[in-house]
Length: 308
Image 1 (cartoon, one colour):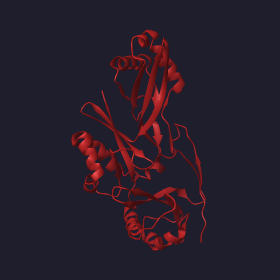
Image 2 (image 1 turned 120 degrees about the vertical axis):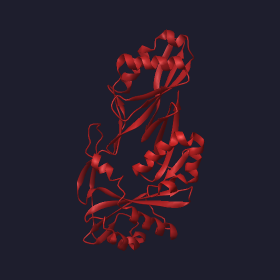
Image 3 (image 1 turned 45 degrees about the vertical axis):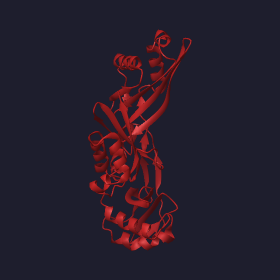
Image 4 (image 1 turned 135 degrees about the horizontal axis):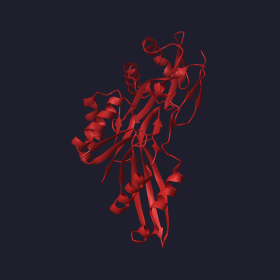
């Protein structure tokens, strides 16, 4: 049996775009037929994989497996017959349990290079304000004068949504209109600079949740939550954003996307129908279409609505 090893060095600087082309491998669908063959057989025979990701390579027509080699060996001939599988490259088989349909979703992806190759891969970095979060919070606290806190509630929250391009502010959301107005003035006054998050070499969207507290003239502003989103659209004066979940369903408005499905199959899922019924087809259809055409990872996704 051939042995293989790849050394991966992950680096996290916003200006590193080495993995831009590498990340796009996740979106290509030239291994769909092989994915469907493995998915059908694995579900039919009730095969249980020990890891969410199993890697393999083809070396001189021999298949080497990183794990589950005994049970995966039966698929060697399918892999050899797949013309898209290149010799000496690493490939990933990702499995995800679809609870709604009670089946395993299996996807085959081309990996990050050849065997025995050292790679520098930017899997992703968080979004960041120029100067960092502390600098942003200090400026924001100074902008909100003590007199503001004396005349308003003791505790308020804000959500700031950022786009996937530099300095792109999508919106400021909160129940306190005067606080939202003050925050908009703050952004205009200081021309806040912001760099988007990076996911597999691609810029994505994100939100910040801020908590503003006041107690007898003493006050503080904290960032209490940070979330990243793959796609975002506006509809009916509201912002709809979608993110991938790493585990099971997050809430009743989450759903599973299978990158191998057709558009009609995707829309026909019960969980997708629940999301459409909740948000309205005219509001959510475009966002779902963007996800479908992205051929992103098969897994659970969740939608949020931000409304002014």
